[in-house]
Image (cartoon, rainbow, N blue to C red; front, side, top):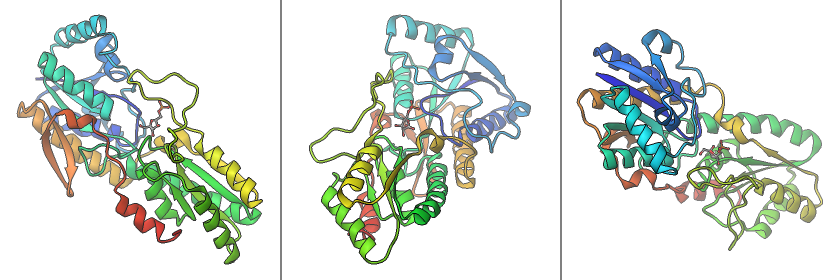
Length: 343
Ligand code: F6P
């Protein structure tokens, strides 16, 4: 049996841990693994590399993806790209495909499995934790910890200078990353896309904390947070091949408003891609390994058109369906708990 592996979309810590687990289990069973480089581009352009246990030894703690990643969407130029994708799949004599990705990459996995019967098993990943198909995705825990470490550092300089620091996090249109890290750092205020920005309330809370003797402030704002009746802020770059705009900039808007309305020195820190880099946390290494082992078990059992996911603490199999592309917004019970500290 010959199995291809690809990682698509925004990278995240834990991808290499998955690759290692898949390669180990499939090799144990006598199968051969082939790496498809840079997401779906690898299959469209026949960019491959061999994958062996020796090559994947020691990568469990390495960030990024040894296969590279991209947001290539073969359905964008279906006549050329889909044709070469199918041709290369046959030329490589693949019997199965393990696809590790977020909503867009898994959406393509669903389509190629439905349209052409390609034997696919999916594994969800994203630092945003915004996938309906899983309770938590690997990459998320690491990203939360990166934000927490950054804010722990920002707190000391904010305190020395009696400043307010606004920290913009990633997360696309969901507030999981902002809310979880905001809770973990004890933020003075958290802004998430699911709750329209209430600027007067934010200013009132910061002023109250100041009056109570707090000399600095930490505000966490998700990149997708927005004012009532306003769409999310986007950067000037063109959207990616799946039509996703680049978000960013709301941190600066909030910073300027706070400084103007409170008269206090305020600084903005946009954490950006730092949140996706570096080694995965122990939790993400373990989750990614379990998912990789579960996915390769499905491959060996020829249970294609499926994905593996974490539900209620257990790794389970579910069919690849339209729900792979469904977005999961923040469970507001977490926000309500967080808001106890700034209500
Ligand atoms: O989906 C992961 C993510 O990091 C989002 O949080 C962010 O909006 C986006 O990807 C950034 O994408 P890019 O790496 O293409 O700039």
